[in-house]
Length: 207
Image 1 (cartoon, helix red, strand yellow):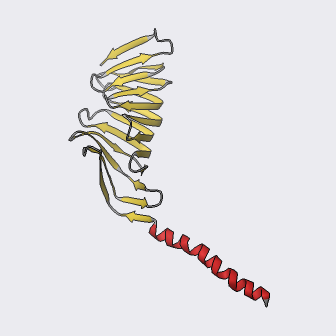
Image 2 (image 1 turned 90 degrees about the horizontal axis):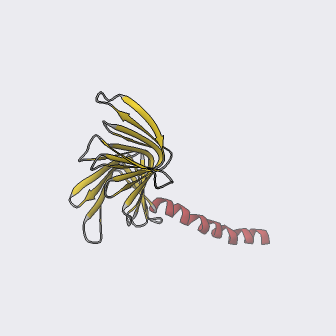
Image 3 (image 1 turned 30 degrees about the vertical axis):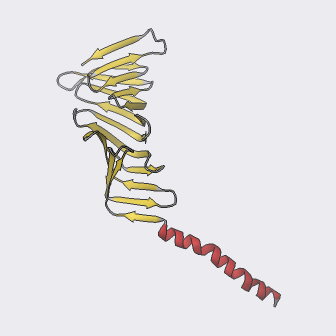
């Protein structure tokens, strides 16, 4: 009989221990069939926007996860960069943006410039964007490859060694292929700078 009483006392504890998990599962994760969200700075300026056909919001972790997102990064009223990827995660009170899978970045002013990567990470408080994995930058004149790159707000892309670059001719054919250490490409001036560990070694190419 004592075993039966113990079971009766223990059973409600098991039920109470499991019930919150079921409730949380239904309330914590909110599905969003069509996301269209703008993020503003403290001064009220639009920093970036996210649109996605399939998203979810975790109210415990305060995290948005989106499929096939399109990100617009603004400079004042103008769109500076447009980024697409397979997945995105927005967390830390909308201050940390992570993109994963087939990341593609382009500018509106120079539409033939394309920057590709596996991952894109942006801490909104900082002024640069980190790209990692299978980096490729390409336009009508040059192709650069590396494993890691940083895009700065002044439109300079830093490629970390080892860097391989290919120069194209007027027919868009590859005419030379060179390996180097760190490289810096300026989107505004279309110039490429190479720097080695020994700071005395430096070269610059204009296209």
